[in-house]
Length: 305
Image 1 (tube, rainbow, N blue to C red):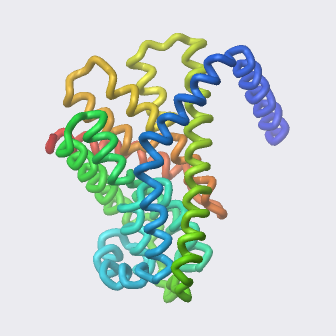
Image 2: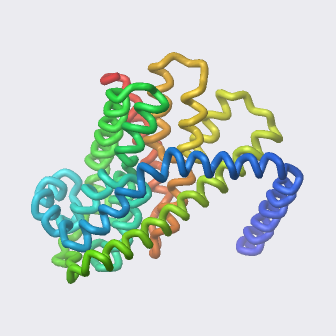
Protein backbone atom coordinates (compact mmCIF):
# COMPACT_ATOMS: atom_id res chain seq x y z
CA UNK A 1 0.00 0.00 0.00
CA UNK A 2 2.82 2.39 0.88
CA UNK A 3 4.45 1.78 -2.50
CA UNK A 4 1.17 2.57 -4.30
CA UNK A 5 0.68 5.75 -2.27
CA UNK A 6 4.21 6.89 -3.16
CA UNK A 7 3.51 6.29 -6.84
CA UNK A 8 0.24 8.21 -6.67
CA UNK A 9 1.86 11.11 -4.81
CA UNK A 10 4.73 11.21 -7.32
CA UNK A 11 2.27 11.21 -10.22
CA UNK A 12 0.24 14.04 -8.69
CA UNK A 13 3.37 16.07 -7.98
CA UNK A 14 4.72 15.82 -11.52
CA UNK A 15 1.26 16.40 -13.01
CA UNK A 16 0.83 19.60 -10.99
CA UNK A 17 4.39 20.66 -11.83
CA UNK A 18 3.78 20.10 -15.55
CA UNK A 19 0.55 22.12 -15.32
CA UNK A 20 2.35 24.98 -13.57
CA UNK A 21 5.16 24.96 -16.14
CA UNK A 22 2.67 25.16 -19.02
CA UNK A 23 0.76 27.99 -17.32
CA UNK A 24 4.00 29.90 -16.61
CA UNK A 25 5.83 29.38 -19.90
CA UNK A 26 7.30 32.88 -19.93
CA UNK A 27 8.74 32.39 -16.42
CA UNK A 28 10.17 29.03 -17.46
CA UNK A 29 11.80 30.49 -20.58
CA UNK A 30 13.43 33.34 -18.68
CA UNK A 31 14.58 30.91 -15.96
CA UNK A 32 16.27 28.65 -18.51
CA UNK A 33 18.07 31.64 -20.04
CA UNK A 34 19.08 32.87 -16.58
CA UNK A 35 20.40 29.42 -15.65
CA UNK A 36 22.45 29.21 -18.85
CA UNK A 37 23.95 32.66 -18.22
CA UNK A 38 24.87 31.79 -14.64
CA UNK A 39 26.45 28.51 -15.71
CA UNK A 40 28.44 29.69 -18.74
CA UNK A 41 29.63 33.00 -17.27
CA UNK A 42 30.14 32.13 -13.59
CA UNK A 43 30.40 28.35 -13.16
CA UNK A 44 31.87 26.77 -16.30
CA UNK A 45 35.03 28.95 -16.51
CA UNK A 46 35.90 28.00 -12.92
CA UNK A 47 35.24 24.27 -12.89
CA UNK A 48 36.13 23.06 -16.41
CA UNK A 49 39.95 23.50 -16.17
CA UNK A 50 40.04 21.66 -12.84
CA UNK A 51 38.09 18.71 -14.22
CA UNK A 52 40.65 18.41 -17.03
CA UNK A 53 43.57 18.70 -14.60
CA UNK A 54 42.21 16.06 -12.21
CA UNK A 55 41.94 13.47 -14.98
CA UNK A 56 45.61 14.01 -15.88
CA UNK A 57 46.61 13.70 -12.22
CA UNK A 58 44.74 10.41 -11.91
CA UNK A 59 46.03 9.10 -15.26
CA UNK A 60 49.66 9.63 -14.25
CA UNK A 61 49.03 8.17 -10.78
CA UNK A 62 49.61 11.33 -8.78
CA UNK A 63 46.91 9.94 -6.48
CA UNK A 64 49.39 7.30 -5.32
CA UNK A 65 51.93 9.97 -4.30
CA UNK A 66 49.20 12.07 -2.67
CA UNK A 67 48.31 9.07 -0.51
CA UNK A 68 51.97 8.64 0.47
CA UNK A 69 52.18 12.28 1.58
CA UNK A 70 48.87 12.62 3.44
CA UNK A 71 47.73 9.14 4.47
CA UNK A 72 49.13 9.28 8.01
CA UNK A 73 47.64 12.73 8.69
CA UNK A 74 44.16 12.02 7.31
CA UNK A 75 43.86 8.50 8.71
CA UNK A 76 44.73 9.93 12.16
CA UNK A 77 42.39 12.95 11.93
CA UNK A 78 39.38 11.35 10.28
CA UNK A 79 39.90 7.60 10.84
CA UNK A 80 39.60 6.86 7.14
CA UNK A 81 41.35 4.35 4.94
CA UNK A 82 44.80 5.83 4.25
CA UNK A 83 44.51 4.90 0.56
CA UNK A 84 41.49 7.21 0.19
CA UNK A 85 43.43 10.33 1.24
CA UNK A 86 43.70 11.50 -2.36
CA UNK A 87 39.90 11.98 -2.45
CA UNK A 88 40.17 14.81 0.07
CA UNK A 89 43.05 16.55 -1.72
CA UNK A 90 41.51 16.31 -5.21
CA UNK A 91 38.13 17.46 -3.86
CA UNK A 92 39.81 20.51 -2.31
CA UNK A 93 41.12 21.68 -5.68
CA UNK A 94 38.36 20.48 -8.01
CA UNK A 95 35.31 21.57 -6.08
CA UNK A 96 31.90 19.97 -5.78
CA UNK A 97 30.41 17.71 -7.00
CA UNK A 98 33.68 16.10 -8.16
CA UNK A 99 34.06 14.52 -4.70
CA UNK A 100 31.21 12.16 -5.64
CA UNK A 101 33.04 11.03 -8.77
CA UNK A 102 36.28 10.34 -6.85
CA UNK A 103 34.36 8.47 -4.14
CA UNK A 104 32.48 6.38 -6.70
CA UNK A 105 35.75 5.48 -8.47
CA UNK A 106 37.33 4.47 -5.13
CA UNK A 107 34.32 2.32 -4.25
CA UNK A 108 34.38 0.55 -7.62
CA UNK A 109 38.10 -0.10 -7.12
CA UNK A 110 37.26 -1.56 -3.66
CA UNK A 111 39.40 1.03 -1.90
CA UNK A 112 36.45 2.03 0.33
CA UNK A 113 33.07 0.56 1.30
CA UNK A 114 29.59 2.14 1.48
CA UNK A 115 29.99 3.36 5.05
CA UNK A 116 33.33 5.06 4.47
CA UNK A 117 31.97 6.55 1.26
CA UNK A 118 29.16 8.11 3.31
CA UNK A 119 31.62 9.64 5.79
CA UNK A 120 33.92 10.95 3.06
CA UNK A 121 30.99 12.43 1.17
CA UNK A 122 29.78 14.20 4.31
CA UNK A 123 32.88 16.40 4.76
CA UNK A 124 34.36 16.73 1.24
CA UNK A 125 31.83 19.12 -0.32
CA UNK A 126 34.43 21.81 -1.02
CA UNK A 127 33.55 24.60 -3.46
CA UNK A 128 35.80 25.19 -6.44
CA UNK A 129 38.56 27.59 -5.22
CA UNK A 130 38.61 29.62 -8.44
CA UNK A 131 34.82 30.06 -8.26
CA UNK A 132 34.95 31.26 -4.65
CA UNK A 133 37.94 33.60 -5.01
CA UNK A 134 37.22 35.00 -8.47
CA UNK A 135 33.45 34.80 -9.01
CA UNK A 136 32.27 35.25 -5.42
CA UNK A 137 35.12 37.31 -3.97
CA UNK A 138 36.25 39.54 -6.85
CA UNK A 139 33.12 39.79 -9.02
CA UNK A 140 30.24 39.65 -6.51
CA UNK A 141 31.85 41.05 -3.35
CA UNK A 142 34.60 43.15 -4.96
CA UNK A 143 37.26 41.72 -2.67
CA UNK A 144 39.93 39.12 -3.33
CA UNK A 145 40.74 38.82 0.40
CA UNK A 146 37.10 38.15 1.36
CA UNK A 147 36.96 35.39 -1.25
CA UNK A 148 40.07 33.80 0.30
CA UNK A 149 38.56 34.10 3.80
CA UNK A 150 35.32 32.46 2.65
CA UNK A 151 37.28 29.61 1.08
CA UNK A 152 39.43 29.06 4.18
CA UNK A 153 36.41 29.14 6.51
CA UNK A 154 34.66 26.47 4.39
CA UNK A 155 37.78 24.29 4.36
CA UNK A 156 38.11 24.58 8.14
CA UNK A 157 34.39 23.93 8.71
CA UNK A 158 34.48 20.71 6.72
CA UNK A 159 37.67 19.52 8.40
CA UNK A 160 36.15 20.19 11.83
CA UNK A 161 33.08 18.20 10.81
CA UNK A 162 35.37 15.39 9.63
CA UNK A 163 36.99 15.32 13.07
CA UNK A 164 33.60 15.42 14.83
CA UNK A 165 32.34 12.38 12.89
CA UNK A 166 35.69 10.53 12.91
CA UNK A 167 34.28 7.77 15.14
CA UNK A 168 31.28 7.22 12.85
CA UNK A 169 31.79 4.61 10.13
CA UNK A 170 35.38 3.94 11.21
CA UNK A 171 37.24 2.51 8.23
CA UNK A 172 38.80 -0.90 7.98
CA UNK A 173 42.27 -0.85 6.49
CA UNK A 174 42.54 -1.83 2.84
CA UNK A 175 45.54 -2.53 0.66
CA UNK A 176 43.66 -1.66 -2.53
CA UNK A 177 44.85 1.45 -4.36
CA UNK A 178 43.94 2.99 -7.70
CA UNK A 179 46.88 2.70 -10.08
CA UNK A 180 46.46 3.08 -13.82
CA UNK A 181 48.66 2.13 -16.70
CA UNK A 182 49.40 5.66 -17.93
CA UNK A 183 47.67 6.37 -21.22
CA UNK A 184 49.03 8.64 -23.93
CA UNK A 185 48.66 12.40 -23.61
CA UNK A 186 46.21 12.63 -26.54
CA UNK A 187 43.97 9.83 -25.21
CA UNK A 188 44.03 11.30 -21.72
CA UNK A 189 43.09 14.72 -23.08
CA UNK A 190 40.22 13.24 -25.09
CA UNK A 191 38.93 11.25 -22.10
CA UNK A 192 39.26 14.22 -19.74
CA UNK A 193 37.38 16.59 -22.07
CA UNK A 194 34.65 14.00 -22.61
CA UNK A 195 34.27 13.40 -18.86
CA UNK A 196 34.40 17.10 -18.03
CA UNK A 197 31.65 17.96 -20.50
CA UNK A 198 29.43 15.15 -19.24
CA UNK A 199 29.83 16.38 -15.67
CA UNK A 200 29.23 19.99 -16.73
CA UNK A 201 26.04 19.00 -18.55
CA UNK A 202 24.75 17.34 -15.37
CA UNK A 203 25.53 20.54 -13.45
CA UNK A 204 23.86 22.76 -16.08
CA UNK A 205 20.77 20.54 -16.16
CA UNK A 206 20.47 20.54 -12.37
CA UNK A 207 20.87 24.31 -12.13
CA UNK A 208 18.19 24.77 -14.80
CA UNK A 209 15.67 22.39 -13.19
CA UNK A 210 16.03 23.84 -9.70
CA UNK A 211 15.95 27.43 -10.95
CA UNK A 212 12.77 26.78 -12.95
CA UNK A 213 11.19 25.10 -9.93
CA UNK A 214 12.10 28.02 -7.71
CA UNK A 215 10.84 30.65 -10.17
CA UNK A 216 7.51 28.91 -10.70
CA UNK A 217 6.88 28.49 -6.96
CA UNK A 218 8.02 32.04 -6.26
CA UNK A 219 5.67 33.46 -8.91
CA UNK A 220 2.73 31.65 -7.31
CA UNK A 221 3.32 32.67 -3.71
CA UNK A 222 4.97 36.06 -4.21
CA UNK A 223 7.71 35.69 -1.59
CA UNK A 224 9.67 38.81 -0.69
CA UNK A 225 13.24 39.07 -1.93
CA UNK A 226 14.79 38.15 1.43
CA UNK A 227 12.81 34.93 1.75
CA UNK A 228 13.53 34.28 -1.94
CA UNK A 229 17.28 34.46 -1.33
CA UNK A 230 17.08 31.86 1.46
CA UNK A 231 14.70 29.62 -0.48
CA UNK A 232 16.71 29.58 -3.70
CA UNK A 233 19.98 29.14 -1.75
CA UNK A 234 18.52 26.01 -0.18
CA UNK A 235 17.57 24.72 -3.64
CA UNK A 236 20.35 26.00 -5.91
CA UNK A 237 23.53 27.53 -4.53
CA UNK A 238 24.73 29.60 -7.51
CA UNK A 239 21.44 31.41 -8.10
CA UNK A 240 21.09 31.99 -4.35
CA UNK A 241 24.52 33.60 -4.15
CA UNK A 242 23.60 35.81 -7.10
CA UNK A 243 20.46 37.08 -5.34
CA UNK A 244 22.17 37.55 -1.96
CA UNK A 245 24.89 39.70 -3.54
CA UNK A 246 22.21 42.14 -4.80
CA UNK A 247 20.34 42.47 -1.48
CA UNK A 248 20.26 45.75 0.42
CA UNK A 249 22.24 44.42 3.36
CA UNK A 250 25.50 45.33 5.04
CA UNK A 251 28.65 44.00 3.39
CA UNK A 252 29.50 41.67 6.29
CA UNK A 253 26.01 40.16 6.43
CA UNK A 254 26.13 39.49 2.67
CA UNK A 255 29.51 37.80 3.01
CA UNK A 256 28.32 35.64 5.94
CA UNK A 257 25.16 34.57 4.09
CA UNK A 258 27.11 33.71 0.94
CA UNK A 259 29.66 31.75 2.96
CA UNK A 260 26.83 29.83 4.65
CA UNK A 261 25.21 29.17 1.28
CA UNK A 262 28.49 27.79 -0.11
CA UNK A 263 28.87 25.60 2.99
CA UNK A 264 25.48 23.94 2.58
CA UNK A 265 25.89 23.66 -1.23
CA UNK A 266 22.14 23.34 -1.92
CA UNK A 267 19.88 20.47 -2.91
CA UNK A 268 20.89 20.95 -6.54
CA UNK A 269 24.55 20.07 -5.86
CA UNK A 270 23.57 17.26 -3.52
CA UNK A 271 21.34 15.75 -6.21
CA UNK A 272 24.21 16.02 -8.72
CA UNK A 273 26.47 14.17 -6.29
CA UNK A 274 23.87 11.48 -5.69
CA UNK A 275 23.47 10.93 -9.44
CA UNK A 276 27.21 10.18 -9.70
CA UNK A 277 27.11 7.48 -7.02
CA UNK A 278 26.32 3.99 -8.32
CA UNK A 279 25.74 2.37 -4.94
CA UNK A 280 23.65 2.89 -1.82
CA UNK A 281 24.72 5.76 0.40
CA UNK A 282 23.18 7.42 3.49
CA UNK A 283 22.14 10.81 2.12
CA UNK A 284 20.08 11.72 5.17
CA UNK A 285 23.27 11.65 7.20
CA UNK A 286 25.06 13.74 4.55
CA UNK A 287 22.31 16.42 4.50
CA UNK A 288 22.36 16.59 8.31
CA UNK A 289 26.14 17.08 8.17
CA UNK A 290 25.72 19.95 5.69
CA UNK A 291 23.54 21.83 8.19
CA UNK A 292 26.16 21.26 10.89
CA UNK A 293 28.85 22.62 8.55
CA UNK A 294 26.76 25.77 7.99
CA UNK A 295 26.65 26.46 11.75
CA UNK A 296 30.39 25.85 12.13
CA UNK A 297 31.14 28.03 9.11
CA UNK A 298 29.07 30.98 10.36
CA UNK A 299 30.99 30.89 13.65
CA UNK A 300 34.43 30.65 11.99
CA UNK A 301 33.78 33.19 9.27
CA UNK A 302 32.36 35.66 11.79
CA UNK A 303 35.69 35.48 13.63
CA UNK A 304 37.94 36.06 10.61
CA UNK A 305 35.94 38.52 8.48
